[in-house]
Structures are given as C-alpha cells and as structure tokens.
Image (cartoon, rainbow, N blue to C red):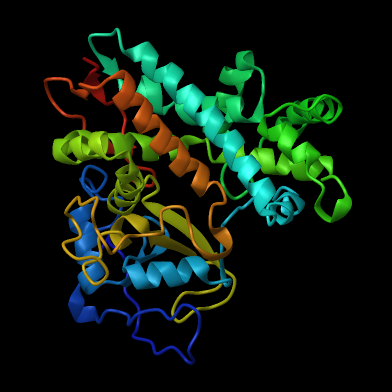
Length: 386
C-alpha cells in the first residue's frame, strides 16, 4: 500500500542476542499507519497502542526506520552495543572527571555546587513571575531555568547566560556533541579557577586530584560540557511536561505542597508518561533478525512508557506508582550522565514556584496540547501566578 510501512517475509532469529527482535507480523496483519501520517503528531498514542499490540517490530517506509514499541524491546535495544547513535559526534574527554567522582567527598561537593546554582536560579526566575497577572511558564521559566542554573553552578558570568542558553538549546546533547567554540569559551575560566578557586563547580573540578594528580583541562571542560548538555532543550521540554502534568492534577500538586519529598516521584511519573524525547534513533552495526546492517531503528519511548505489559493502567497519572519507568534519559552505554541534574532542576524549580506562587494555577481558557513527533511537550503553559 503506497505511503504505508512495507512488509517482509517472516523470520526466525538464529541465536539469542542482547536484543532479540519480536516476531515479524504476517502479511494478513495488514500494515499500521506511519508515524508521518496526518494526526499522529497531534496524538501519537492510538498508533502506539496499535504498534505495541500488533506490530511490535515493523518497517515504517515513509519514516525510514524500523519501529520498536514495547517496553522490554526498547529497553533491550537501547542497551545493545550493536545499535549505536546514528551520529554521536565527538565525545568529550571527561572520563577522568567521572573517575574522580568515585570519591564520595568529591561527589558531595559536585552535588552541593549544582544544587546551590539550581536553587538560586529557580528562586530568582520564580520571584520575577510573582507580580504578573499572567505568565507563560514555558517561555518565562522552563526555557531559561536549566541553562541559567548551569551557568550559576559552574560559576560562569551572569552576562553570558543568553550565549550559553543558545548553545544549550541548539548545540549540545547528552551524548557529547558540542559546538566547536564551547571548549575555547570554557578554557579561560578553567585557567582562572586553577589560580583563584571559589566554591562553584568549575573550582571543585579544578581542585580535584584523583590518583594525586589534578584533572587535565579537557576532562574539566568535558564534564562542564555534560552539565551544559543536561541543561539543553530536552530538559526544558521535560520540565514543561512535568509542570503541565501537575497543573492538570491539582490534587497531586497539593500533596507536593504539603510533602515536597514527593516531587521526585512526580518527576519520574512525568518522564514515564510524557517523555520529552518520544523517539530515539539507533543505527544497526550488523544484521539483527530482519533489520539489515546500517538500518535506522526508532525506539519509541513514548510507546514504551505506556506499555500495559510493564505498567498497570499505563495512561493514568499516578505519583505513587510503584512500577516506575526509567528510559527517558537513555539506557546502557547511552544513559545520560546529566539525568541527575535534570531531576535536581525539576525538583528545585517546582519548590521555587510553589514558594513564590502558592496559588499557581492554569490561566482560564483553552489548554495548549503537547506538540512534536520526535520531541514532544507543551509549547506554551499560560498560568495565573496569583
């Protein structure tokens, strides 16, 4: 059928492997819609249900990728070394920084520096909204908090926030890809911290001495790049979905007002139910079942997070859910090392909003829907701060 995912003969995997493809659907099963069909971007979940139930592995010809949608398959595929990021770009040399973090004392220092920067920035941004009759949490808070918090935590100049914000939104990712100018920007700050350390994250990294030797400059800038990568568009989108979900469930929001320790559970539930990245692409290094070498595999995180075989009543929003998801920030060799910072940003951001805006609620009128096929979140979030 033109414009539909194509079919192929059945197959039987020759041997067990880290990712074993599910059975190929028979020709009698027909073909599902494509991810690119009209209406999928508006609401992908009907298609996700069809894929999970009848087409757990299918080639979407218009989209140009093999689709996998069940939780177990997506998790296995993300951890399979035969499936790699299509264009991961240069990976920063920050292994030394991570080895240094094996020290609990240094890890505590890093966490303290990050928390201080995030909390300070969240408080400033939330306070600016308090006097407004109406605000857009996406434009005025979510888009700025991750990058501005990273700037504060690293001890970078406040006046560089807009520049770093642009880098975070367009030139950084959690796999290590960075704009060429980032290292050149960071190195002078590293030199100054080595000569005049403070209490910021760059100073902590510059003072670290794993094995009795200081971290090289490229390890410090590489780790700083990871922090900035975690402050990019994905975290901004995740924060928007997180706040949108809570505003849609006032009882849960009220519980967190009274019990702030529940914010972490709400964050995990948001990542499971409405992940900021709905689709993660991988490239096959060798044939895997019917998937040929060099083919693109689309791991549908948005479908996996609502798989009824893994989650009870998966469409329900439940911050007390015991069966939580864990795929939104990757898995295996591609697990995002900035995920803890993203969670810290979300929790601190919510606390700051509830402190500065205790009566926070959605603005009257229509509720903007999430948008996007690969990356998905509300583009606007109008609220009444008071």
